[in-house]
Amino acid sequence: MQPKRLLTGVACCLFPVLAQAAVTASYACPESVPAASISLTGVPAGWTPYIDSQLYLSAAAPIDGAPQRRGQLVPSGERKKKGQTTLSYRLEGRYPDGKWLQCSYGVHGEVTLSRRMDDSVSVCEFTYRKGSKAGQNEIDIDCR
Image 1 (cartoon, helix red, strand yellow):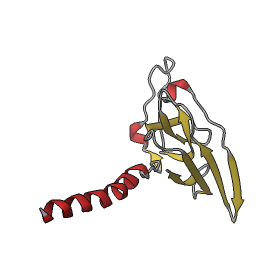
Image 2 (image 1 turned 135 degrees about the horizontal axis):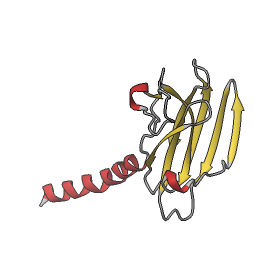
Image 3 (image 1 turned 180 degrees about the horizontal axis):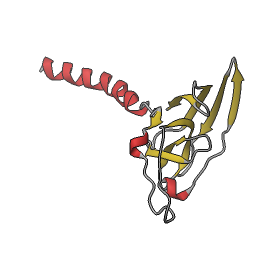
Image 4 (image 1 turned 120 degrees about the horizontal axis):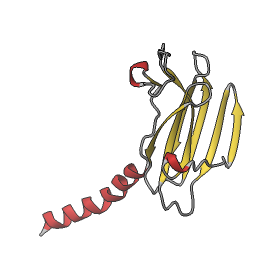
């Protein structure tokens, strides 16, 4: 009888820890999109496309739904200190098409990569620092 009680007690205590670990998932954008993964099709006749280099990460943000919806969200706060800018987003309320992380590449965000986030995420902070390449930003993402 004792081993069952011990097992129940351990499960009872570990479950909240494991549940919390699942909620604080790690989100990070790839640093760049390799040139080999970019292709141009349907270019005008007589023109030859050439892609010289990779595209570097320039921006990241949560979005409402899949990227095709263009569900851009407005930050709820902004802090600046020592060469860093942190944008905060509150993700409360209904998101019937899910909460997504969108990573933008190229100086003007010409290419994006997106992935769905856990529905339980309620706040995200994106901390930007200038990268070493033109238009590049290093971005730390903290969503919970």
